[in-house]
Length: 212
Image (cartoon, rainbow, N blue to C red; front, side):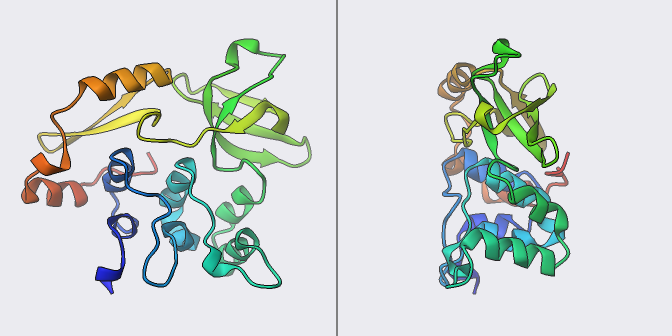
């Protein structure tokens, strides 16, 4: 069974920085297993909430393997989350931008925020607004759907970079795409080819928590 899954699937079960490191090195967030399922499908489990949120920030879509004549992949995923008690994720993904990495746009109240990347924490249905957290500053703001557009993380625009240095995790944050790209282009020593098997094993088993 393990041979039918990519490393991204295996990283879903590791309480470490293995998953984001795979993604920042270009692993496909929507890679499929032998059954046509994507990693996000398994995010319905409450203990994998942090992993599911990370996948969504990187643009993961809902698995077509859940679709039926009576429900879309997204609706089927929500029902699965509810069935297994992951109501937090179910509530998050009901809205258009919930859980996604986005870019602020056309925000007249704070034009200085336009173009900034953010994470959409929740949708407030009564106010018809989204609660977002800005990358870099961590500032929280309420915006409307017209003030957001998706800006999924990519290896060239990941928002932060995780390093594994001498057995320790180091996280480098960026304030802009240009800053991120400049860092990536200058930081070349760490490639998977250069990693020893022992180093990779210690990385997978590290205690760095995705939820922090």
